[in-house]
Length: 518
Image (cartoon, rainbow, N blue to C red; front, top):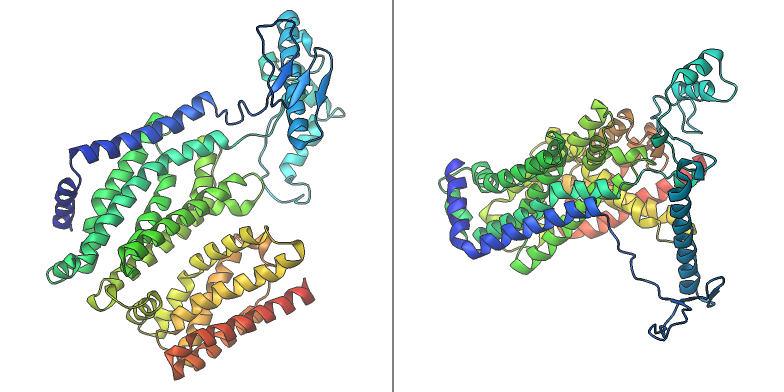
């Protein structure tokens, strides 16, 4: 493995001259610096959008011909357009801010008759889930009210008030994640450059059949690990450097699952691609999807408990100095770690001269399934582990259906879930289409779904996936898996028809159960 890593380093030096390496390093440094400076100085993307004419009795001032708002000193004139109304709102807000600065400079803290301070607390349990307040927090609210106990009032009287901790009511805003999101990107941005160089090198070795030469003397896992090691080490060093600069030495740990998944996904895509053009497109799409899956949930970290499935959400919590539950870390890391491990294992199986060249992507996936799954026990295990991929795809489906009309959201979500689950089960059953393999696959997938419920990942969203039922989903998975197996057993060319029938049964079943029992 180390010999392969040394060979990869030498090849990279030959392939990329000093000029190219300098450009890559400069591009990485520029991206890191731009992101870091945007956090320090702020992002003024809305500056200079509107044009306002102000009446000034001076011929040296020229009025704009494309004005949005006119201000004569005492009145504001607007057009009957959304843009003009928005500009007027911005102008009024700017005038209020200017007036506020003037009175604060003159009167100081006396400029505001009321000052308040907000302390954000985290719910410790779900005694009052309808209000988002736990039992311990409700006790705090009662004690801090105007009708609090005598002891609480004495405690307030003893507390030394720091006026700098208080603000006018209009200044109280919910915490923003924009700056922290930019910081989170700093951990991953260098890996994007590294991943592209790595995938390009691996694709070149595949198309020039160098991998086949290596297979005659080196094991598959040593080839892939050896080629991966230098690039992953660079990504790891970059993430550690960002952690040190931000004075959070352990923050890089939360970025490792995302980086590892990026690398293993790139390996798998290279192995199943047939040409450079196809690989380039798929590599871009896969990188984009992983980025969305890692960062979008973090945007809703304060509203959706499901967002903790992403390590980036935990990274933001760590950067804010919040306490992180060990169970959340274990679930998040295991989720992405399982996908990375499965993709790497499948990539090793795909590193076969009979698979890497020619054939369609679907034919390669079927052959990889046959090489990877030899018996019903392995079918159960792969189905169990595949729940991570199903969960990822179904989360994308949940995000996608919101662009549809409300009447189509539930049917579209149910159909998407059916397509995802039946496609994944079908890839496993196709390794040996028989009833025994179908039942093992169904049992493994069902066990994975129940694990999500037990781990409290889908507890609040179990209705959409029928997670609160036991016998019904099991019967559904067994039925559709058997249907797929019996049809495909006659001919592999019937896979589209088998998948279509299984998806139809699954979707109709889900829709009926949701409509009747929801």
